[in-house]
Image (tube, rainbow, N blue to C red; front, top):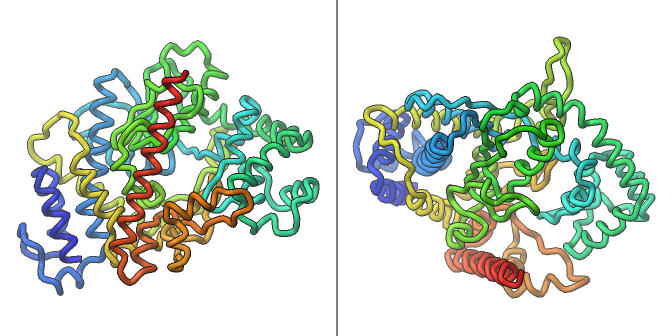
Length: 471
């Protein structure tokens, strides 16, 4: 970690206020005399691990810059209130409270308990065709059981539908290819029993989410925006549908601020989606080395996922959580505390109130996520990750792949795997981490991963540009 620490320091020196805050925080936690020079090897090993070093020199500066950008741009746009969406918005919310107070921005900051699952299972009856598209989305490992869980059915009900559709005894273990998911969507769309129960379930959930959103002020006719990690931005779309269904006379359109977006939901006003690190129509280099699943793991919240809402004895609506705590809660709490300390430190003295570019963030994230060290891959790769909208499955964000699995993730083999009847490739939510963990000499393979991802996003950009031109 000593060499990697030196690299992070060199990058951060490009923005002295970020560098000085990281150095101050590192000094506090190493309990050594403050110096701009790296500590001795035994000091680093005795006092710190990779999670602490990355939190102080990568995640804290990156998240600080993002939240600062959100708050300053929200003020400039005239927003009075910001809703940070659970669970990715947890660290953002904590930092925002510190920055908002110290810079006297006077924004109302709220933390909204929600999830794709909690929102969609109350929304499905409003937009049924779109609902089936969400229910049958592809992912790292999607089974028939996964699809049923997305629809709001588990246990006996999922087994009942598997039997009704003659899906076989391995419905809960067999991963479906993209082609198979397309076929399943057609079958579900034509299954009257399935459609009827999806609609009935959503109608049953709708009153509680309506009550929660009203209680939290989302029907107020004031200018507000959402803040989240991003990726597709579907929660803003669904929240907009839910709010407009109940409060159609609101005069202020809903907007959102995101760390990054790979795509926009269909049929939305793209001008209402604001991105910091990358947008759907650009940022190919940034996307190529970025690991959004790892980002989610690090910046999630300690509590479990919201799966619905209910009234308590006082008549107040409260979120129902899937678990008492997040599977990664201990690591999350450690990182969150460091981020809060960092924000307090960097705001000591005169603050420069202007949004900054994300160039330094790009250098830090590209190094950490795209070229992790062995210690980083081991520490962060062990985060428990779920690739779906419900629950935490026992899989790590850097899946333990064999050399053959890693080779199968190369460009040419991925192209061949798209043929009908080809077996599904074993994937990883953080492929660069899996490469470092699974290969003795990973440097060449890491370059292949970045090259493949650049081609993937370049191809997507060209396809969208041609589509817009022909339209």
